[in-house]
Image 1 (cartoon, rainbow, N blue to C red):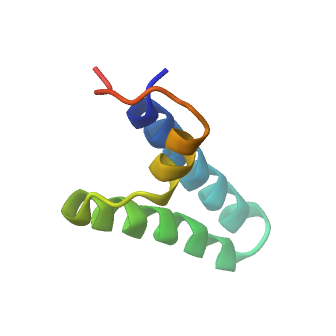
Image 2 (spheres, helix red, strand yellow):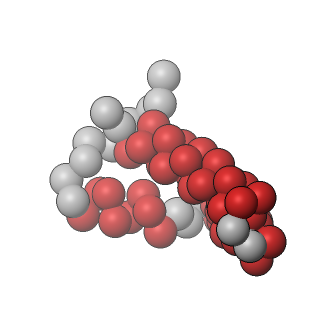
Image 3 (cartoon, one colour):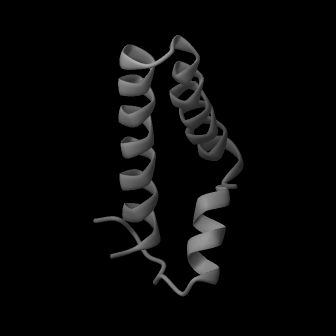
Length: 66
């Protein structure tokens, strides 16, 4: 699995977890989904993704998602 696919999978999971926690636990958990969305938005402009850097250091192979 490539870095791109892992980032998309992780971001999608965090958005869903944030929404579920916001619905069932406390509305402040919606901020988790907002943070992930903002990070994806800024990464589309800057090319900087903290998770991608971490995964690269862990040895995950880079490459296009498809």
